[in-house]
Structures are given as structure tokens and as C-alpha cells.
Image: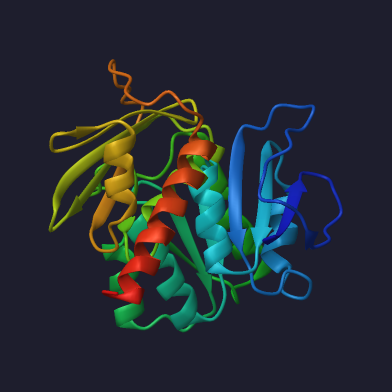
Length: 272
């Protein structure tokens, strides 16, 4: 299980092993914030300030891989990456490649050199010095949260329709599909590789339609699962009027992964 700290406003902190799912509070939460902090027990200066802000829910993860998994499965208004300068900026940039329309803050100590500043500006990443004064840090964090509540920070040059984008050599199609179905997403995945383009449509966490060339339905899904190179992006809210897949996504996933394993085993064994 991913180590995740769920932090509704007003609750004491404490990192434990919790599944990456959201248990809603009894009161409505207007803004959801995911925070990447490798040591939330001792490096809690910014976390304490976020605790002061009404109307937000914060969740803390310790590793970038956990953050990506949570962002794939759920919707967050903002993502804060806290850490040492070069690493924090690299992680922020990595997250930007996967989530082009996500509001991202890089919280790292000064000095921020010219390359650091230029990269942050190019990637549309909000840059905040974690070693500034308490009053300055509080003011900047409050301003970031307010911008999220007001509809986010403008991201010129970024296509807001593509809420998720990435490479198949980092995440397999099966992993992407599983996390998106668990997150109850609705929309269209487009996969592009040397073999061509393919599409998988989701409706409320269920696979509704898939197409690759002349293949449709489960046959198209099975082909896409074989791809190990290429790119993908997800467009929220695009629903197919055609339905070629009827089975639950979990059954579809298990069956196709078993077939893929059998194919790989036969390939490794070679001719008899």
C-alpha cells in the first residue's frame, strides 16, 4: 500500500499506511491539495500553515510514484512539491509532463538560480522559497490556495482538455486503465505508437468502447495492452455513444493480462 497521510482541516498529523482512496468528510471541502513531502514529521512548516486554512483538504505522500498514482485515481485542485531545490524542481517538472493542466507549486529553499527560475516559468510551476520568513511563506501559501478556489492559475500554452498525458514506457496501458477506472473517470484515452492510434472510452469508471484500426471492443483492448512504447493522453468528459465492451473492467483487465503473460512465455520459450 502507498504511505499516504490524509489531513482534513483541524485533524492531527500522523503518517500511516492507508489505501489510496478518499473518504469524504461530513462537511463539504471546496479545495483538494496533494502535497509531496519526503519527511512530513520534521519538515512540517508549510504543512502547519496549510492546516490553518479553512475549506481545504490536504493529503500528503512521500514519494513521487505515490503522488502520480493518487493523481491518476482522483481529482485534486493543486499539487505541492516540497524538498531540496534541484530534486523538487525535477519532480515538479515530471508531474507537469503527466498532468498538463494541474496547478503545481515547487516549494524549495533559496537560492533559486537562473536555470531554476527559467524552468519553473517555462513549465508554469509556481515557485516559492521554503526558507523565507514565516509571514512571507504564509502569505504565498494562502495566495496559492485562493487561486485554486477561484479557478486556478492561468496556464498559457497548455491544453486544458488533456487532463492526463504520459509515456507507455513509464506506465503500462493496463496500469493507466486500472487507476482511471478506480477513480470513476469518464472520458477518452488516446494511445499513439508506431503501430498506429487507438482509443478507449470510459464512462463512470467502466470501459464502454475501444477501437484500434478494424478492431473494436475487447479485441482492441487486448492489442493496446501489448504496447510497450508510445504516448497517451486523456480527455475528460468525452463519452462514446457506441458500446462495444460489456464486461466489468476488472474482469477485462485480468483476462487480458493473463493472455499477455501466456504470449510472453511462449515468445521466451522460442520454437520447440
